[in-house]
Length: 375
DNA sequence: TAAGATGATTCGTA
DNA sequence: TACGAATCATCTTA
Image (cartoon, rainbow, N blue to C red; front, top):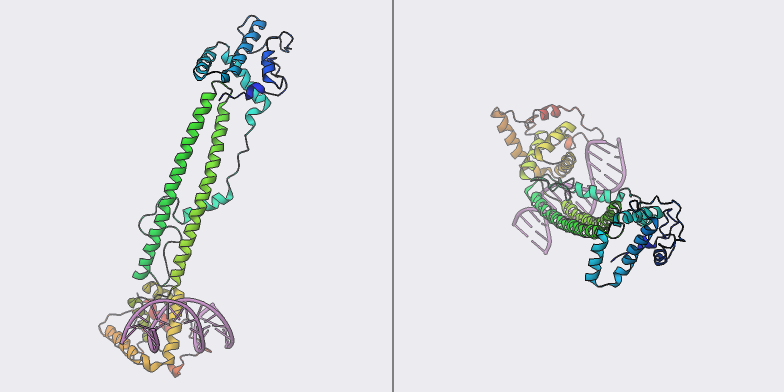
């Protein structure tokens, strides 16, 4: 309970000649009133108010003696003695002297550490949790948070949105567990800190504990708890990574384009059958219309050209269908976007080979103008 | 469950 | 770098 460290201060004499210049506190205390004890300051001590230096020393000696014996007493006795000591007229002076000694001997710095810069790993974890939408404010409605949120392969088909919601709900679970645990840790940290602070404050009545030391102790506690929090963050990040990788694997699964998207692409393809090479702009436009990426449009046209060429007969019916559609649209004065070149009945690639690889379609091909009015 | 359809990937070419 | 061709992996359908 009552620590004796300030009393066993082994530093050099503090110049106040309080008999603290010995390792053995008790000896020092016992000898505090001895006249032989050297006083270097000739009575400057913080013990002013006493007229007689000798008397003062004896007084102090008595107090210290009482402090030292307090641990041997029963609790009640000790409490009473503590109270008496706290009320003793010499107490404030003695206390301030003890504090000073402690400062000088560096005892209060025992556990002091330089303020550490923020752990870069922790910063990374924090950033990641923020980016994933686990930490920070909850993101409403739309995305599953952060960059990992929306799937984009094959557009936002109903299937993928289903998958998406699954991802979202799992992420929400992780988020909720993370926040619950975090709250627990924070609460525990606060409770423990308060407890320790109370203890120290209580002790500071009987031993020299400065507010600065209490602050340091609090900082130490916070460091300990923050290392636990780091572990929590690490685990959470791992969980998110696992979830993400599973989700990404799922996204790799091929999804058919929506019927509507296929229709748009087919309309373009058959209405440009003589030259089914959409320009970059046209691809972008188609991608936008279909809710897919430009490269998916490119893939689609690549596959379509090959497959069409390989089996024109098989696609004849489809070609007729879209040609009719196109013609109908044109007749209705609906200057539909997909009715540009109206090769309509031209169901075959020119020479069965379009331009061929040696002569790719001119970039500024005529159809690109058509595609521009395609919205 | 097998066959066909389809989107993606890889590789060679100009 | 865009394209054709081959191929893979998955989805759809009967």
